[in-house]
Image (cartoon, rainbow, N blue to C red; front, side, top):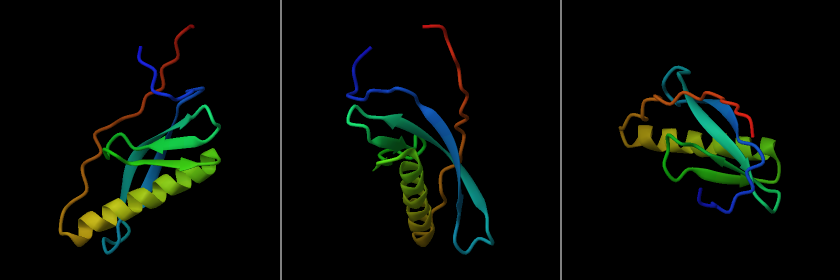
Length: 98
C-alpha cells in the first residue's frame, strides 16, 4: 500500500445535506470523509466531487468548511444552468481485525 502522507488514524464518514438556492429547499446529500494528517489537522474530502478537499483545525471546522464548499459548488452549477451530479455513493463502514 502506498503512503499518501496522511496519518489516517481514523476515517469518519459524514453525510452532509446541502440546500440548493431557488429550489424550494431541496436537499442534496453528499458523503464527506474526514482524515487526520500527521500535523494534527483534519482534511475533509468529498469523493463525489473531484478536487473537493478542505482543511480544519478540528473535525467540526473541517465539516463546516466542506459544507460551505459543497454549497458554493452546487450554487455555481445552478447559476450556470447545470444540475448537480446524482449522489450514487453510499458510505458503508467495514471493520476488520488488524
